[in-house]
Image 1: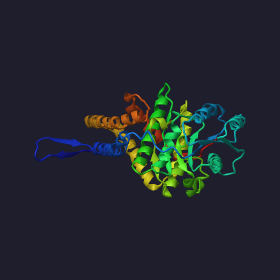
Image 2: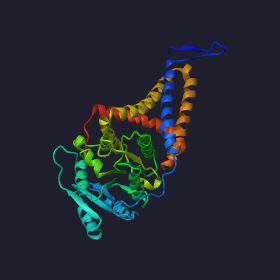
Image 3: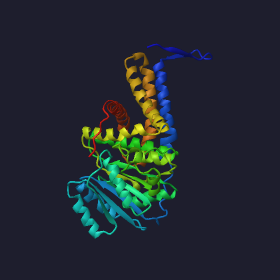
Image 4: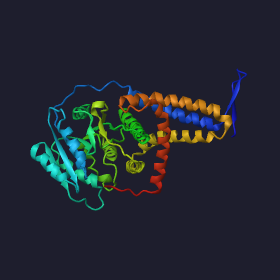
Length: 385
């Protein structure tokens, strides 16, 4: 590989680095910037206040499609939330063919704060979940709305209390974190690492004043925000994006975002158990990214691109033994940066991933991300429930 010399005229020593090594160094510098400006400061920020105003009632919305068993686990935990100002639960039965309707009717009969919205069909061309959520939001009695999915559970009985306090910062949107349950196996570790890295991006970017997405498993916004964006009107025919594209529209309309990432405010989901299921899930999630604002796409793309370029360049340099020593040096330096950034996030967000696995998971994740991007470019057809 062609090289050029870098000489210090005051010192007899000289050294030569190939252009590929300089490129490798440039990618690491980009990653250092994200680690130093976004990730580490966010992970080390002061704890969020344990006390706050709890005098506003809240509507909690859950959209379910054939989720009876999950609802039997979730609804009792929602009903036991410790929140003095009162709250209602709006269960949206989205075209279920199981016994979700009968289960919901029983809850409505026993709990006056549980309300049922039934969707029997979705108008042609509209995204089913967005249509169902719209009907649920219209039914909500309170100005503050919190959202979670039927296959999630709140981590504690303080979830509602923590999340609604985000509105008092003040804010129009509240972005929470949703983790996946830990299980044996490499796939589970990779899913949890991907969740950690995604959370590190959207939470730390929002904390720095650049919100761009949230996750529907743990998200809050006001009715006023929903009305200001005309609901999901700008993307009602797009299957994904009931969470991140809503945040995009709300921020564009002047909405203020707050981050609530304390462990008591998390929700917990069961992860995919097969590579195919996770592949389909991530394709749906990533498909909405094409509709992000240009600045957000540049910010995210720079981070992802720098990591992909690092690994691609590093693999290429393996074929040039003369570059092995600088390659090893840069790789070890980059690994140190990675651990210094990701391990505090790992602790702060409660993922508890083994430290030794982080460099391995990072490499596998970015190649998986590349494969997903190629797949979305070549095959854009998506399926929904």
